[in-house]
Amino acid sequence: MARMHSRKKGSSGSTRPARLEKPVWVELSSEEVENEVVKLARKGHSKSMIGVILRDSHGVPLVKVVTGKPISQILKENGIETPLPEDLTNLVKRALTLRKHLETNHKDLESKKGLQRIESKIYRLISYYKNKKVLAPEFKYDPEKVRTLVAR
Image 1 (cartoon, one colour):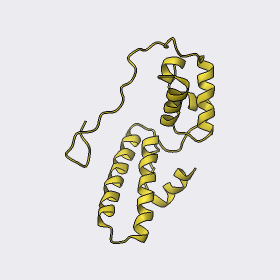
Image 2 (image 1 turned 90 degrees about the vertical axis):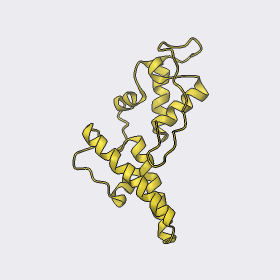
Image 3 (image 1 turned 135 degrees about the vertical axis):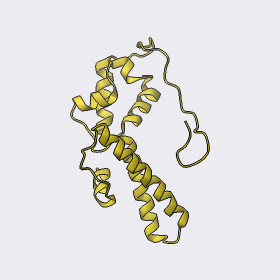
């Protein structure tokens, strides 16, 4: 897939495991994996970071293969939910750090253009999540209000 704001191809990511059954080397049971997911989420890790930690330190290739449920469903069952989706949260954090930079560096035109690009991605994601009913229809992107949501 091509990049949004450049004329280049995207860099390839890692490939998901081909098998859809639990590998033999995974020693953790599904309950232990679920408990580990909840414990890592309570520490403040994001869903993607939880998957990386479980893959690298516990040898779990996919949580869904071992437990039968994705990480988001496990967190929802245990009452751990984030106010914004993870990709939107990451973009908002980038926009907020860029706004802070622009407060001290008013003439940095490249950063202003970068902020416009980031915020256009934010608006596009918000409309997508409103259509998918993940966000409320009256949700508006206001950097000051969203700062409090991201700071949690």
